[in-house]
Image 1 (cartoon, rainbow, N blue to C red):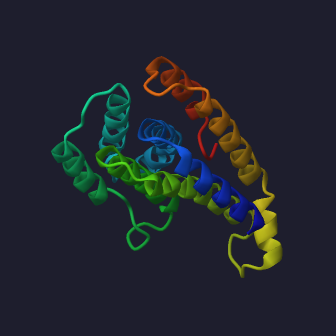
Image 2: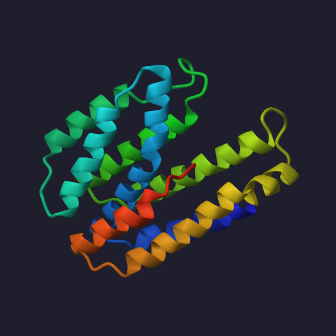
Length: 197
């Protein structure tokens, strides 16, 4: 729990310091990093809407280039994306795909209006993904205890993500607002690393 608390405090403070453009850049990067989890689910289950995932990323990219995205376009895509986010009632192993879908929903909301809370939610879901993956390895079934929580926080997947997020924060700090060339380089490099390998 201590690792999550430190991460959450750091990310809450950091996301609150970002402007709209940098918030979208970060969320877009997390969308790119999380989307393979959704794609893997869709291929496995033969159900979903990977096109909505890709369209969300395209709208975020266009926003970053300075294009005004209409509320109607965002609302329409949001509604379609909501329909293709899996739930545990219908799919046994869908939590990673569900989290990836929700990350894309928060990113769409951010394109419509600036709210630092949306960016913090994206950062939280990113942590949840590695926390759940580590938990599945350590405790496939059983009772959570403080010792298990500590083991999950110290798991290489979690520790690697915490370090990768730190690098991402440092890199974003060097990118001037509206510098899409540097933004693209950030996406091509930092966002190329999947959240869960």
